[in-house]
Figure 1 (tube, rainbow, N blue to C red):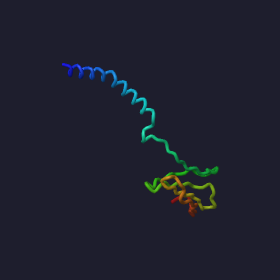
Figure 2: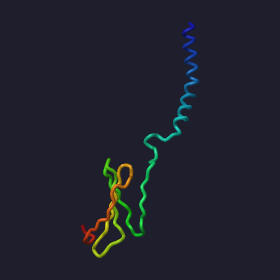
Figure 3: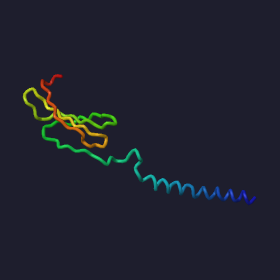
Amino acid sequence: MKFLSFVYSLYVGCKTVLPFLLLFCFFLLGHRPAAAQQPANTRFELIHEHGDQEFTAVSLKENGLALIREKQKSEGNQRFWEIVLLDSTLQQTWNTVMVWNGGRHW
């Protein structure tokens, strides 16, 4: 009989303590962002000159990112394209301006 009363007291105690512990853990652990929602801690900035087009970002998968845009400067039929390569840590690894001779038609 003592064993049953002991089990019953544990059951009644758990009914009152367990919800409190669950709520405490929820509020304690629930106020941090989840691992998938952590903000990026790196950024990459380039000067955008007046008249330049916006960059088009091309994913290079695990090799990083390619940023491509048409420059404002053009001479006759020549168009200038800026290409910037970034590694997976957003560090610039390569930058060039290429000239394309011809009209707007590819």
